[in-house]
Amino acid sequence: MTTATDLALGSESAAVGKPRRPRGPRQHYAKVGLTPLWLLTPAGLVIVALVGAPIVYLIITSFTDSNAFTLNTGQFNWVGLKQYTTTFANVDFWWALVRTVLFTAAMVGGSVLIGMAVAQMLTRLGTVIRYIVTVVLILAWAMPNVASSQVWKWLFEPGFGVINWLVTQTHLFGNTLDVNWPQNSSLAFLCIWLLIVWQAVPFIALTVYAAQTQVSPDYVEAARLDGASEWRIYWSVMLPFLRPTVMLMTILSIIWDFNVFNQIWLISQGGPNDATNTLGVYTYTQAFVSNNFGGGAAISIITTILLMLFTSFYIRSLLRSGEDL
Amino acid sequence: MTTSVPGLTYVSPLRRRKRRPWLISIVAILFCIVWIFPVYWMVNTSFKPISDVLTTTPLFFPTHFTFDNYSAAVGQTDFLQNLANSVVVVVGTVLVSTLLAFFACAALTRFRFRGRRTIMVIILAVQMLPTVALLVPTFLVFGDLDLRNTLFGLVVAYVASVLPFSIWVMRGFFLGVPVEIEEAARMDGANNWRILWSVLFPLVAPGVISTSIFAFITAWNEYIVAYTFLSDQTNYTLPIWLASFSTPRTGTDFGGQMAASVLFSLPVVIFFLIIQRKLVSGIAAGAVKG
Image (cartoon, rainbow over all chains, first blue to last red):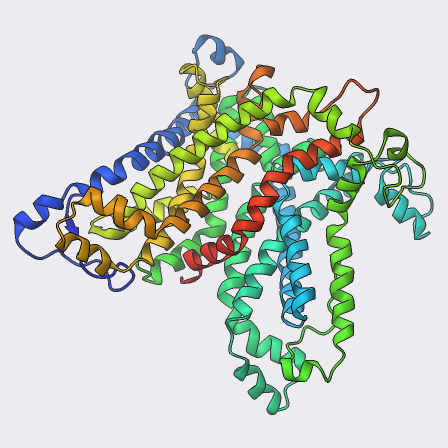
C-alpha cells in the first residue's frame, strides 16, 4: 500500500486509457501529491494488519505444534514441515478433499444450471408474474443462512417435518415419516445441497436475466428467420452473449461453495460418520475442536492454494484483459 | 424440488401471444410455490400455537393464529441483550468500513499512481480467502491482545472481512462521476478535502448507501467468527442466539425457533429488497468487464 510514490492528479477520466506517466510541473503534484497516500492509509492499514499479517502468522503457525497448551502458555515448538506431512499422510484429509470437490461440483452445477433455466423463464413471462418470481427469488436469497439452516432442520425434522410427510404422500418410498435426514450419509448431503442451491439460484438467475435483457432481440429474430430451432437459438445465439456472465457466476459459485461452512456445521456438523465433513469443517474441527492449531493452519494453507489454483485462470484473464483496474 | 423449464427458448414479445403463454406461466407459478415454501413454512409455523406445530398431518394454513411464539422468543430468552450486542457490532462495522472504503476509493479512482493496479488485484484476491483460514491466526492474535471475547474485537474482524468488497462495489460508483465536475470545483478554489466532502460525497451517496447496507447484512448475519470468538453469553450476537435457540418450554420449541428466525431475518430481507438491483449490477459491472 505504501508503494504510492509516483503520484499525480488524475486529469483524464479514470475509466479510459492506461495508467500513464504523469507530466507537468513538479510543484503541481507536490501540492496534491500525498493526498491519495493518506486517503489509502486507513484502509491499507486495516487490510495489512488484519489480512496480510494473519496470513503471515498462519504460515508461521503451520510450521509449529501450536495447540491448547500454546493457547494458555504461549509456548510452542518448531516442527518444520511435520504438520504438512502429517496432513498428507492422513486419509481423513484426502477424503475431505474428495468430498469437498464433489460437493462443490454438485452445488455449482445445480445452482448454475437451474439459475440459467430460471433466467430464461423470466424472459418469457408477463410483467406481473415476472415481478412475483423476482420477489420470491429475493426472499429466498435474503434469508440469513443461520436462519435458513434452522428452517431446514424443521422442514426435515423426523416425525413432524413437513418434507417427510410430503414424501410419504407420494407413496414412492413407503412411510418415510421418521427418516432422519441429517443422520443419513447420502440424505444429509441431499438436504444441504437443497439448502445451498435454494439460496444460490436467485443471485445467478437475476444476474443472468439482467445480462439476457441486454442482448438485442434482433439477433434472435434473424436466427429465427433463418429457420433455427428455439433450442438452437438459445445455444448458438444467446449463450455466446451470456458466456462472460455465466463464467463469472460459475467462478463465484466455486469460491463460495468450496468455502461453505455454516449450513453444514448447523445441519449435520460434518456427520454422520464424516459423510459431510468437507475441508472447511475438517479444518475447523482440527483447529477449534481438537485445538490442533498447527495442523489447522497447514490444512488452511493447502485449501487456500487449491482454491487459488481453481480460480487462477479467472484472475489471470482479468489481469490480461487489460481492464483499467 | 427441481424446476423444469420445458424448451429453453427465447420468444419475442410479438410471438409470445401466438404461442402458449399459459404454459410458461404455470411453470413459473409452480416454481414460485416450491421456492417460497420454506419461507412460507417458517412464517406459518411461527404463528401456530404449540399444539398445532407438532401434528401428524401438517397444518398448511394457520387456523389458531397466535403471537405466543414471538412473545416467548423475545421475552423468555436473552433476545434483547443479544440484539443490543448485534446493534453495537453492526453500527460499528458499517460506519468504519464505509468511511475507510470511501477514502480508499477516492484515492484509487481520482488519482493515478504506481501500484494502483496491484492494489486492486490484491483486493480481489483477498476475497477468495476461506473464512476458516483467517480464523486460526486472528483467533490466536486476538487472544494475545485480549480482543477475543469483546464486541470491539468482533467489529475489527468484521471491518477487515467487509472492506475489500466494499471498496470493490463503491469503486464502480466513483468511476461514474465525471472528472470535469471535480476540476470545476478545483478551478473555483476548492481544496482536496472540500472536493471530497462537498463534491464527491453527494455524488456517490447511492454507492455509500449500497455499501453500508452490504456491510450491515454481512455483520448482522455473521456466525462463525462470533461463535468462535465469544465465550460469554452476555456478549453473544443474534446469530449465536438463533443457532442455539431454546426457550423454557419442554422439548425443541419449533414454534419459538421459527418466530426467532423470522425476527432475525426481517431486517435483512427488507434491506435486500432495497439494495438487490444495485448488488446485482454492482457485482456484474465490477467483474464482467474482464
